[in-house]
Each structure stands twice: as C-alpha cells, then as structure tokens.
Length: 96
Image 1 (cartoon, one colour):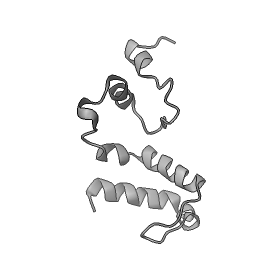
Image 2: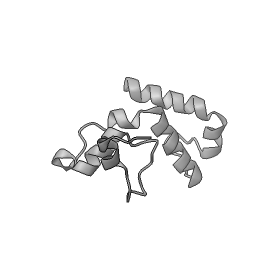
Image 3: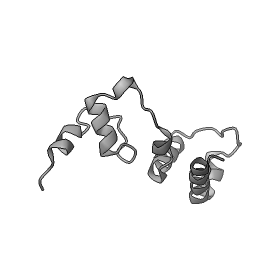
Image 4: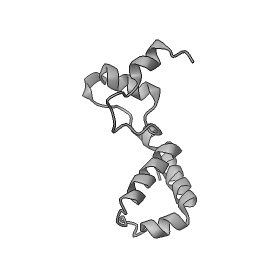
C-alpha cells in the first residue's frame, strides 16, 4: 500500500502518548509542523467527537476514577455507558 508524503510525515513515530482514536491526521500534521502561536484555537470540536469521549471513558475506567460533581461513579456509568456518552455528546454539542 502506498502512503502519501503527508501521511508519512505526520505519523507519531516517537509520540507514545498519542491516542490514535483522538488525534486526526490534520491534528498530527499541526503537531509535527508546530501549532501556530503555540496553542489550539478550537478544542471544543475535538473533545466532542464520540470516539474521543469513549477514549476518555476508557482511561478513567482503567484508572478506577472517582465520581465527579454529578456523583456518578464508574460502576453506575458502566451500567448505562452508551446512554451517558450519548447524553454527554449531546450536551457538549448543544452547549447545555
């Protein structure tokens, strides 16, 4: 399989911390080339993607994270994981 020059340049060779479900090729290219001004201007669209929310849940679950301000712990969240993730996605999307 042939790889484009851009894809070859943006692979996270030494970036073990990069979560592949979270970082898009465009984001990796920005990291590789340097983010203009040293900061991202729009993170909201990046955190609201379902695969990002799922990855975040997996990390919290793996670390046996504590309940947040809503008092929902890992066990309760797990019992309705898809419902809670969809609810969170909708709330982030609508700004509620």
